[in-house]
Length: 263
Length: 182
Image (tube, rainbow over all chains, first blue to last red; front, side, top):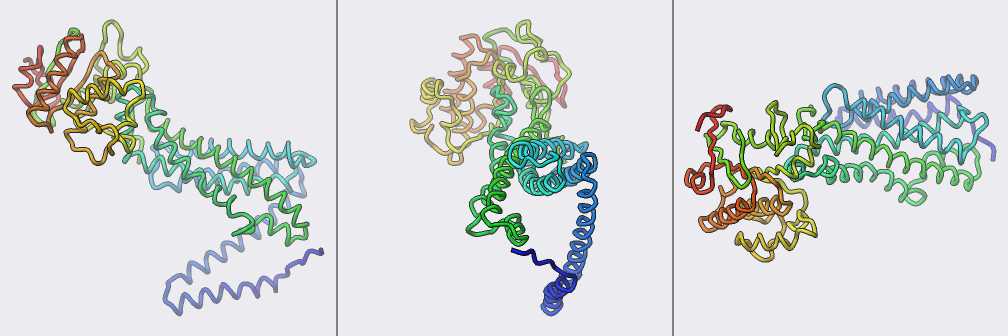
């Protein structure tokens, strides 16, 4: 199958659908037309920019440049994980937890895929590394922010139960187990839903993209399966890391619950 | 101040004077500068969970972490817990009940049982009988008296001078966060 290349005219025609949205917003007085216009413009600018950045990095084919792009992506994702929960920890500890957990889970999952399954040559090949990290980060961000929100937003309500267990001599991780488990479970729900729905309710984006780009559907499916496994592994790791780190930061060296660490 | 084995220190004082905070500090639930020793062992040299297994606090409104009463008791302690529940005049099926459906008095007695089955050396009780009828108060006091005979150290916050009289060997009065001479 030959890849059908899109021209600016094709995109302009598609953009008319956004104009329809804007018209609807004005007509129905939804007050969304400005937001739609800004979001659509942002999306175009961001994607065109990343397209050129990727083209440049692919041409360099250099581990340092690839590493730098990956690092920026991880930093932005960690910031999102830290900023999304309603409550946060004092002294920017949210960001530290986000960074360590996101970087750890993403590095483990991507390196694992690069050296065992994909095995590109060179091993850091930006064609594979950057999209792979991007996809993993999407899932990691979701799972991490939901799990962190679970602990930070739930700890006040869970305080009497946690303190009751601490008073009986349970260590903090056992006293907070119900809250930690609930938060990890919440963080894992999106990826479980995604895996269950894949292929029946939804055709995952990567697979669809590869099929549109001319790859054999069965080959595209293999990639998708690999990715789903990676995403589930990385989501689990980040949810566990975030929930336990938050619980640890909410207690002190004498295993007391420290709600004064919460903002 | 030192408290011997088998004795009860009653802590009195107006609401908000700092009695509960005092108990929390002894149990190491809040940071405190004071020195607390159990025998020769300093609180700070012992891991906090181990300290709280020996020096256990039962607050005025104890917390619960699972839906049913039974889930708050370890399997190995269930026989002792059932026996204590009988002594404290709790219904036989209490362990299969939902925590949400318990009365305040039932919760208070169950929280006391939950702490006692782990056999602490020191028990810190914050108004343990405030929601109980006369007969249940007598049952709790009789249980505490027998635990004291076995060597338990009891620190009891109470608003009831008669109870302080019945159980206490030593008394301490707190006013505005400061200990006043008895």
